Image 1 (cartoon, one colour):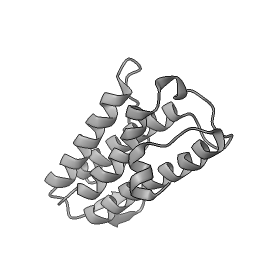
Image 2: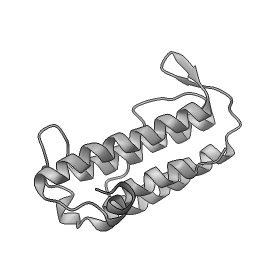
Image 3: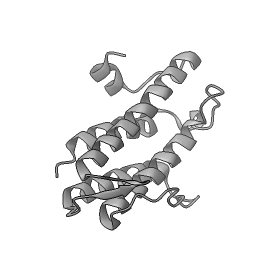
Length: 143
């Protein structure tokens, strides 16, 4: 199964870690959202959950937290590569997600949607706090 759509979506998230100065990662943005550092850790953890699901056949939250001493930028890249490879190599035809069985294609759509939902949330927060979005976001989404 191709994973190009996921890689594109994940890279849009990963660009935040590459382009935003790290001192902004812990800045409170808006009450409804956590910091950008919390977003990064969340994305790494959830990508791991989905990667495991493609191997085990079951989506199991909450997943594993990344080690505190790990590089977030490297973990974002690693988790992207790991999940892309899991999609490309899966032989599963169905995956249990909560009480329903879904196909790997459906999981791919869920994963891409998950990336996009959080990007939209943080785009609004960045606009409200005066933080510039990555250049790719401006070019691809005309933001």
